[in-house]
Image (tube, rainbow, N blue to C red; front, side, top):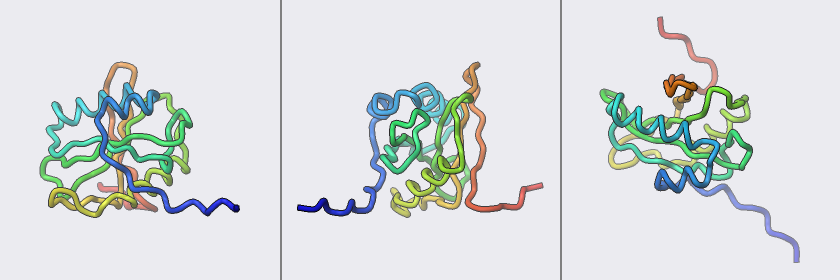
Length: 144
């Protein structure tokens, strides 16, 4: 009997942070520190961890990854944050995989619109500083 063609990837699901760390150990330090930074320093609301599953690039090539979704103060919608270490190797395919996983998320959660035109890349340095970069689809004019 021939194998059936694989169906579309399943949508990312909300998971406990400890489960995400166990599933994606290469992201453990950056995921933990980014979540703490967003919670305590940046004062984001509605924070939750998502398992983006096998469509998202994991820096250790495990075949997936975890992201954080939340609402920053005075923002118009929920944003997705992908965390990594400063030494992690990222490329265009990594960003494409993350955008594809974001596209599988519901357009709205708890009455808040999910912003799918960009995601934030949270880069953890050795001194535990987290620096955020906005990664947009296509070319975007810089803000002066």
